[in-house]
Image (cartoon, rainbow, N blue to C red; front, side, top):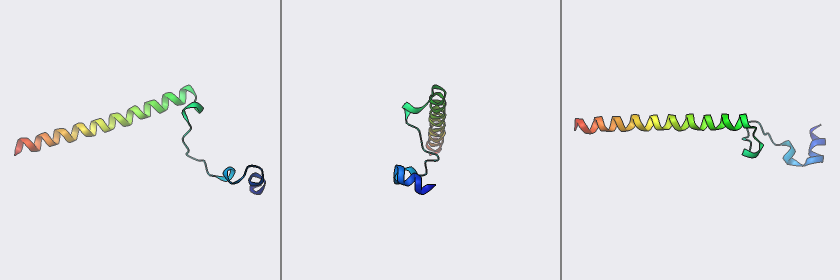
Length: 64
């Protein structure tokens, strides 16, 4: 079967596409919203980490 796929579509047909990210134009509205929520969660996590770092830095500076 793989030989048939290869003969018809070439080497690209045999590439493993598991886990690939769909382009924006291939996403349904629900998938777009889920992606946006995930992006916002990651951004929020980074901002929390920045905030904790700055608080710790201020604490260290105050001790000096």
